[in-house]
Amino acid sequence: MPEVSTAPSLYPVLSRSAVTALWKGQVIEAIKLVRLEQNIGLNEAKDLIDTYLRSQPALKDQIDEAQADAREGLLRWLMFLLIGGAGLAYLLT
Image 1 (cartoon, rainbow, N blue to C red):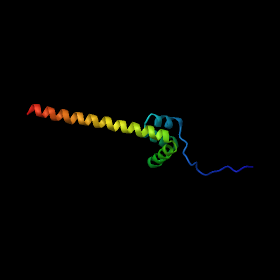
Image 2: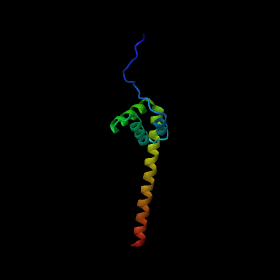
Image 3: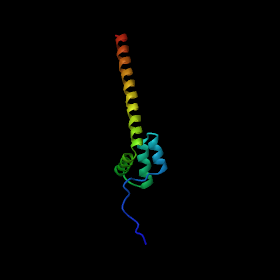
Image 4: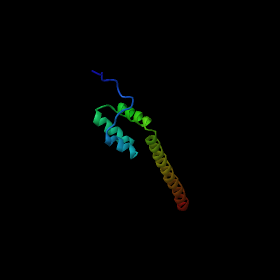
């Protein structure tokens, strides 16, 4: 009779909903799903997601790119608000 390995998998297996959330760039949502589905703590769920992302370089690259785009958009809005506020302050004085 062949032996069945009880060692943990090198890469975590995530549910379809958690993987879908990751492909949508929703890392926090994926962590929430893993916590609920596997009944584990926040740090454990985050570690599982991080390990999964390291095993999926294309997905990791896509998430990194989406986060960079979000930061860039936020920076543009911040610059717009600062310049607009300065212009408004100049006009009111």
